[in-house]
Amino acid sequence: MKPSLFKMATAVALASSLIGLTGCGLPRTGPTKSEIFAGSIQKEGYAYIIPVNRQVTDIIKTKPSLGFSQAFRDARILGSDVINPGDTLGLSIWKTWMRRCCQMLPTILPI
Image (cartoon, rainbow, N blue to C red; front, side, top):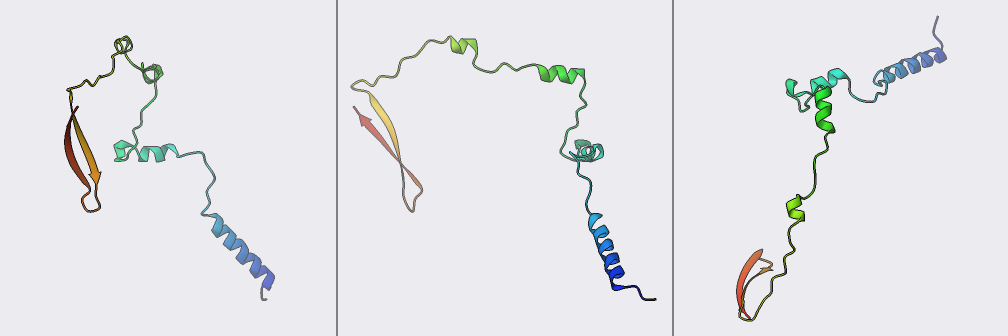
């Protein structure tokens, strides 16, 4: 007895859908423990695995002091530099040209 065309089409559709679904895995939130250990530095990977215990939590809960030191905050305010007659200024003027990238032209200007 010959199988009907409908039964063959159903079998082919079922087989192709099963083959297509074998590549799909269940969704997950992250890597497994074995995948993490496989990438660890002990197995020539790039991840450092640190077991978290009381000592580690005590170290990471301390807040580092950020900002300027008290000596820097208490320093006196300095005045600006004043240019007086007779002072000599040394200037460097940089120009860019099409063929020569940066050419320095030193100039000394007496006031």
